[in-house]
Length: 78
Image (tube, rainbow, N blue to C red; front, side):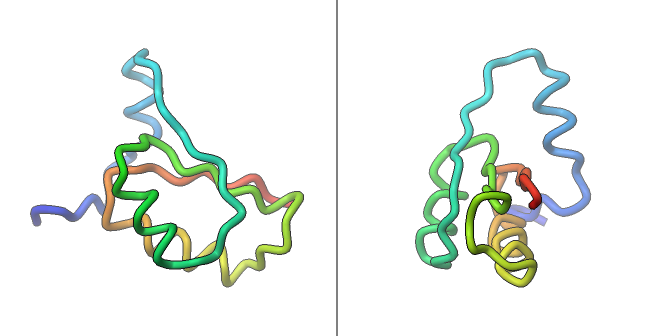
């Protein structure tokens, strides 16, 4: 389906390409900001959960928002 990136090992492909990747660290849980960031051309969204007040529910929502974008999601867990 166009615009759907489910099932692709995006991060693995990005890293294997050997190209420089552009990422964004975030502790934001605002859905509007996260959707905007996910569709702004970043290759990776890096979610800082170790030193933030993000809950597992917040992390799940962030991942769900990013699923419709070409950005991969990495989470730094507490």
